[in-house]
View (cartoon, helix red, strand yellow):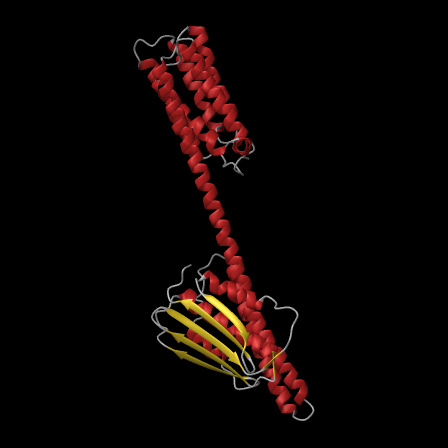
Length: 371
């Protein structure tokens, strides 16, 4: 209990407090004349002038209820607690004073923990003081506590709902950053690896076959153009709120097919037409990263097989090469990103060496992704 009270006391204000809105002024513009009209029209209203002045003057506290909720509660309930000492009865009695429930609501919606505690003490002191002096019956005091408690509970509920929404948005932003980071890594790494391989081939054949070196340069130029296009697409997504272009699909796996060093063969089994976009995009990115890793790390590989099997419940990806595994002290971000991508969609991704030679990546995603 002590720790709970301490955490409430240390609760900070939600930041930042919203600016004063136009409807705050409308609220004041409506309530102030209403207080005057009610004070003039109500029969048998004792201390009519004082009642109208108090009710009308306290309307102004609504303008600062978000930025200074404790001070406004202290002013409003302090005035309503002290004026009965002058008139010797509960005061004021105008119905328009119901607007004061907005102050405890604002206190728990926008105030800090210690402000809320002090505000509750002020409000209870006002009710207790009036009841002790006989200006309020016990049932009226209890009713006042119920009304104020309801307003405070509603304010706290809205406060924590907004906080939960903020956390949800932060989580969405974090996941989106991770997705963009994986896409950048997958696309850039794939094209850069292809350029590196072509450059090595060009260097190796430059002396004996200059035409082959020129062909390698052409391929490097094409890969560089594709990498720049994909990077510009990601940057455009980050810098604008335009509608996102459709992501890669399983049908785009044909772009990975290659007949040169090592060759890449793609086989797709099953109906892929109605696959959800996140699943198709993930399968493409997983295959692309697996092919990139095989080109980069599999020594003396001659073939990379990409096989996708789609059934009624799942999509299975298998990428296998026949090269010799190159030992590396660091796994980098590629395999980690692949596992994260599959996990986010409710699937799995595993990678490991084959029994004889080569390396295989197996991924299984549910047909209907659990995002």
